[in-house]
Length: 423
Image (tube, rainbow, N blue to C red):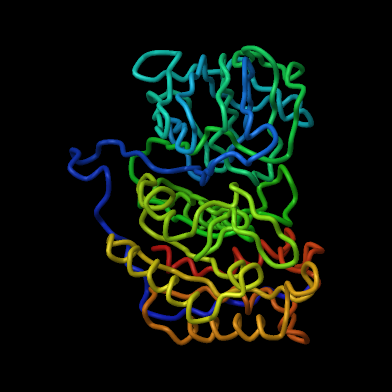
């Protein structure tokens, strides 16, 4: 296996912003820190995400980045078409004695989630909810299991479509069930109505938000192993500074997302487009990026889908990346950007062409020479095959010639200079 390349760094070292949602509190008071998050979209036009859940429970597994003695959970009905009633909600740890059955939870750890003291709550159409704090100590890089019961038909769900994690759905209220036998539907796809987990800490330097597409969303990585490169970056941060000053890593990527196009727009090679690919990236900033708990740094890795799906020009892609950068920095946040990675050999004829490759190279040349961003992560250099720079290195190729495998994701995480993240 070839050694991972070091990412090219352009621009001044990142400066961690000092402002944040917890300023103004008495010195030494605990603060809330983002530990896990997911970008959400509207349910698709067909299937379960369109019809919704009805007298059903859904059990979902999330993987924290940083820990603390208390937590709170965020639910979202942002893209719903009606108010949605949550009959009951719980959070627990997995049952370590049955590691092969991910739907089992450790019964003594099951904690009821309440909202303003109530176990049952209604999410308004387009609304979000934050649970009351729960006394459940959370470790760094720990799995948590959230179970939600919906007693009435929800209609189209608000969801994240590519979780790379098995989800469990069953009839009636299973929120308190330790065993998972009642969960008869087990897709490897999605988190529904669940958008974030915060932890309370003594001190927090904030969070790193990754705004990306399927490469950061983990397509090509092994399901149920948390081998997306943002997960592996969180591992590095914990190893480098295993204490309360470690930033959380929040992966707000959406498979198929584009800078300049809506998810429902079709693409090259017969790609039909779906709601789950999300709105254009600039439309996502105020929903997916800026509201995150304690966000301090934003890593933008977008543009390859604008090339292969939509044949956008380098100028159009660069203009949108510059606009994302300006808006991020206007908020006092550190702005990092990543070069676009190779994809020759992916998809049907017309998906990759020499002309589209020239566009990719032009975007990357601009990013490498730019001093607008606080730093540039050269993921192209990390993943490309030196013998054929328009292709992924075979050792890092998941097989579809665009998405890195577990080794490729590790190489990307290893190439991020930690000093750009304040370490």
